[in-house]
Length: 243
Image 1 (cartoon, helix red, strand yellow):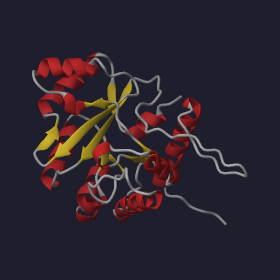
Image 2 (image 1 turned 60 degrees about the horizontal axis):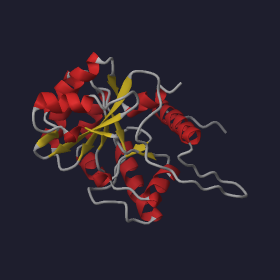
Image 3 (image 1 turned 135 degrees about the vertical axis):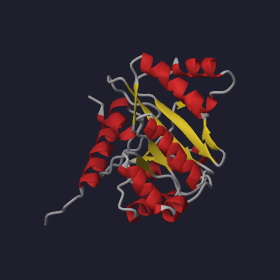
């Protein structure tokens, strides 16, 4: 029997396979089935080991509506940035056309959950149910989700991370929070940019009042990174850059 996989599905499987190699390589955990099942702790992905001058950009959509999402997408596209978005299933199901348009522009989507309720206290079965609905919401829009999960509130548990991994998604915990840029724009942007290295993952938060940090902070932040030769990328591209 021949099983045909769409190009998007093949890419997703290849990326997840690369992630498994990363997990094995740095020994942050894996569960391998067999006669004697081996269990090790799986930690959320905070950084990717790459020699290429790239950093990942993640957008966590929390309380934002259609207007805020489209404005943020247009802002990033104006800067030439393609990001990895995490939007709950409720929004995706209500706004499939917006998600499709963003994907057509080069953005990608990981799974998040059904809404903004924390998942870190759920059982494995409950967590998998929410992850499944998030995946199905994207699939209904003819999109293959990237193999990453960012839970609501960025709250994790070993059960949640393991459940996601078993469903083909690696939990993500960005190590660089762009949301911390406050106060004097120049100083804040320069300070945070100085902490970014190759393979780091930068988080933007999107609320009903708009993007956090404010756009001016992020533009200045990118300027400093560009001066250091670092370029933004989706998480999938970041993983693909592993040699």
